[in-house]
Length: 226
Image (tube, rainbow, N blue to C red; front, side):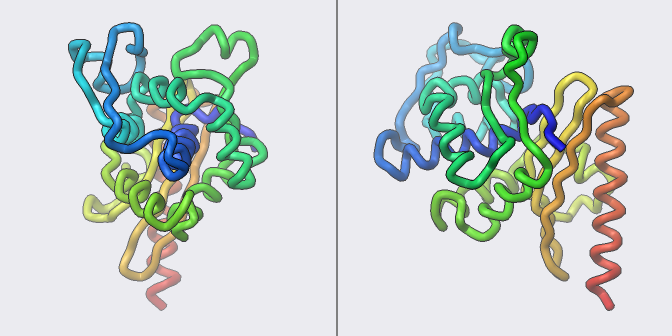
């Protein structure tokens, strides 16, 4: 099923940035100056800061993932271009995962230009990261390290033990909640992608994702402990 991607599309944007770096057009250490015209509402910390702060591209990319920062995301979309994001998605074999608008562009949504994805394609991206095939081995390790430092929770991890390591990316819109990730356990690791829409409330969606994730986790342990 195709869903509005919400912030899970940021995984593909991260891939596009990494490809530009691999091909030498930009560098992780390149500096970006924060100005008020770049500020975007919604999730994130950059909108709360004074302008003229300088950040590296890697710092901006990290904020896009671990805090789902929308200002950081739009800065990177402007940096690499929407076509480059969709090209890397196509290169990864993604048919339904498309970037059609920047973050918080409600006018684009009204005009039918929504970012989209599917659970299966999110799993495909995560599998490439896990298998060290996300751009290349080094960039896969960087992506995985950033995802493990995720600070937006209360979805996949809501009812899981606090010491479980989950490398994941959340997403939410009005009455829509997503969380996609890699769960690490001493008995083995697995990928889980839960996307929802048409919810009664966002709180309900987070709880549904948490309950499903808990069931999967408990059954995974049970089956692999035999």
